[in-house]
Image (cartoon, rainbow, N blue to C red; front, side, top):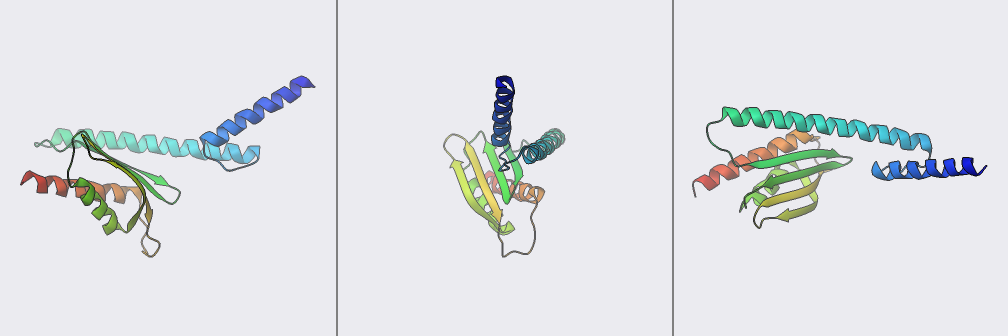
Length: 160
């Protein structure tokens, strides 16, 4: 009897841990496991996208003659919007404005942001689509827009 209750308590504890790790709001075992399975699939997709990004970055950097500004951009799809990370080892005065203008051009509202521009440049933003805009935006479009903003900013700063 004690053993069965102990096993039940341990199982409950593990399910609650799984629920918290996967940000699940489910209450029953089956739903928690389904949410965990979906979460694992999302992680697999993120890994695939990151591997593709790395491969693309390696091929594009080996084929270009000039040294581009080493700025890393990642865009993850959230339930309602995107998590956008932009990082450069160098401080990039004016880059924040260029990136925010790109968001505005896309109709992306910045819901939350953390920015550091001291010794390096780091932007972590949560952007949500403007409900009034009719078009739907995908993560690739957001990443492309940020990349274009960085390229334009870089070209403008070369001449100064």
